[in-house]
Length: 230
Length: 384
Image (cartoon, rainbow over all chains, first blue to last red; front, side):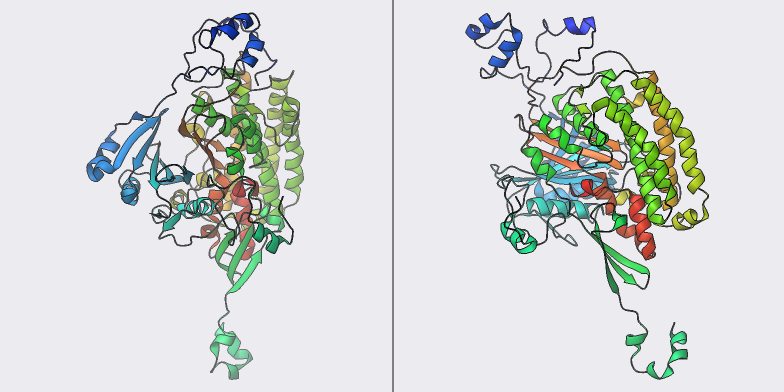
């Protein structure tokens, strides 16, 4: 990656060796930890040691964790909606985890009372092992406040989420794409049908149980007149 | 209308008006192979005569499953793929992706890398706007600007080629900085290009800004109000032409944009002509930024210290940049492994295209072509 080009700046060059891995990012070759036996003879030749070492995985320094986020906004929301809201912050980005039952009310309050007038994105993530495997993420932005926020909610397989296309027109296509890729139904959506894939396609590609090479062979054969798309 | 009809054949009017008088809705298919759609966009138009009653976009012809591919590649492997979304502004795509992963890694590119990134991204913004201007003018019937803009865009592509060997899908940036140091004479080339371009932009304006056909075809066409644009999530020059002074480079600066002095041009009328003016002005502002960045280009490393094997800590981030077409965002979920658990791309073209229906309702068929052009969509990014 950072190969060859060595910008000759002396303070930078001298710096990396003695310092301990203070950054939250996992350092691949911490000097002291790990088994002493293979590391000791290899010490004079660091590149070889680095190549040989990866199997002996050192304990990673813990990365940043979500911190509780307190602000006037969260206090107001918690006052109105009680325990269904958790407010957190991760690497400086604030987000709310909202119970599925009140998601539409909270978003309604955000757009009308808190001036989050721009819905940047609606998307989802599939966690097949969770009890509620689908997480829906709304990324919002407020022009008056210049503030960004994410709102997340989780739903079980087969559960529907109320549409937010009544709050932001832009959610129309964004929700259609989530439906297309994950099969999540948005109740009350004016025109919920596939958007990127053909209407008759079977399966939802961005689910984790959908392998990367899988295709709807039947659709391919009928519509394209070829045996397989691969 | 009916008077006219009665003049011709009075006998038929009494009984069945519907057959002769009400023009039925005509459904017309436009695309997916149509020169003005800039790719494979299919628009189903509902028409009453020449008047557009409504549209429906059929997209996905270029769908490659970029987000799925991302889940099956490492963070580094996925980097070249993002160039293939908005292939006329590949550098911007790469910048957004690298910044998002860097945010996830909690690291930052060194100042020199940030400046190089800014220079190349702004050059790419100019190239994207030039390509837009040439093709948009061609759609409307002006052939000459295409040759002018492509001639000048070539100079930018030459700089890209000298810098990283590629012209369009550049893969110019790496997570943590840039791979390549600038070549001998890079600064000179960029400044020469700035000097070269400014008179050329004036030249484009001489061709179009006061051209009567151009003005007639663009003024008042494809109007969208600032309020509608915000509700529709429209960003970029389209939003700014509707009077909203909002640019992520100013609102939430990244990659050192806060160090540069530039303005955000806006329009007031929200029509096709204003969007044209906004983009022309943006090219001039980009020149300003490039000059400042080249003159202030710091020395130092071009790569942050990041591990050879990238394993971002568990977490999720969203980071967005001001791409030539609007807000380009990456939402990345990491499960602590070498491969992203999920990458969501928030494409400006996809969201902006949704505004087409609002913008062409009630106008003429010929204006649909103008409005598709003025939205500046790239189907590779719409479909991903």
